[in-house]
Length: 453
Image 1: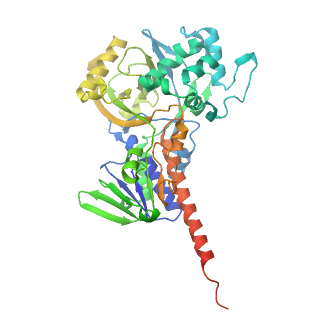
Image 2: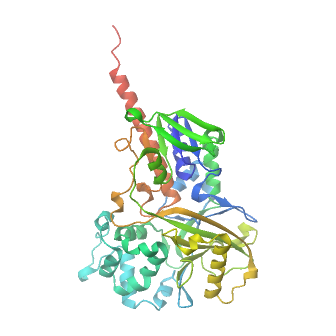
Image 3: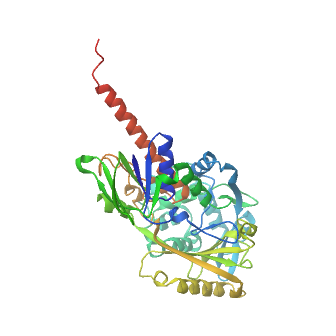
């Protein structure tokens, strides 16, 4: 039996793939709910994710998995509008003429920014088209130094710096240029007239989680079961111990996939991951009327949130019983920060007061409900040297044979963490386990004495 620690999308994907390779699996999830960061709230219509999600066109593994699970027709591609809120004005940033009209960048700033997005290096006045092919070349370059050298000081201060402030806060100066380049490449296709095309699963990504659980088999998924120990004596994992309301149980295992945060991996194996993570406070606000006509609003203002994401300007409100759904979100680098210390009522008041400051016509009476989620580790801080700190999929050399890792500190979650990355990590571990099992079987056959004449 293969043990999988964690019932989020990475763990369920690993279990699904392992079964396709013919392995028996058992998933152990510490909480009572499956899905991790893709868990959902109920609405007047379709469920909505507690933390916002969408797909970029570069993410193909999750689309293939949805197809394999019979949900291929539910993957829908829509155009997600983007705007920047600066000095009391919402500036649309999708169409070329909107970007050209943006008053906070000069025409030359916009030209240099456009060339960077198109992977064209204009330093020295001679275009180069292969400078940005290897992200590794920029791993140790500070993001500010890179942007100023490859575009302009204005592009950094008036375009990228507010976005970095919103995403990384006090840690922005630690971020590498490799992350920024990778993030640009990660984004999907753009239509000149309509903007960027993004994907969503009709009915919500909870449908994908449900389909994975159905595929794996509910009897092979145990919730409320915290894995507390892995027996790696002798250099190979052999047993897994899980505690639940029913007591402690030990299971014989051939291999284990740890599909959780690296803190859990360290507790179980002693393997220390040096990657720092940031937390998120994220609320879904149900409203009777829309706040804006923009899907993703970057907020370059003294506000408690770095972005307002109006989901029903991406997926129509008809899917949610006519309600308009808005995410208010802020990343947290330190648990001592005031927002993190607030209870739900304090967070909700901060959001609503912040919205009122930006939009004086906002009417609190239009708010029908608010649900708030928080997680201390929702995203890595992609600092310089990040790729040297990722946790290998196969921890046979570092921990013990048969131990694998598919959590958020894996290579699949770079340059941006995503549902697709979780699935890729789960598949990578499952395929390695299947390959190792095939190799052992071949070695065992080779070691057998020849048949007697």
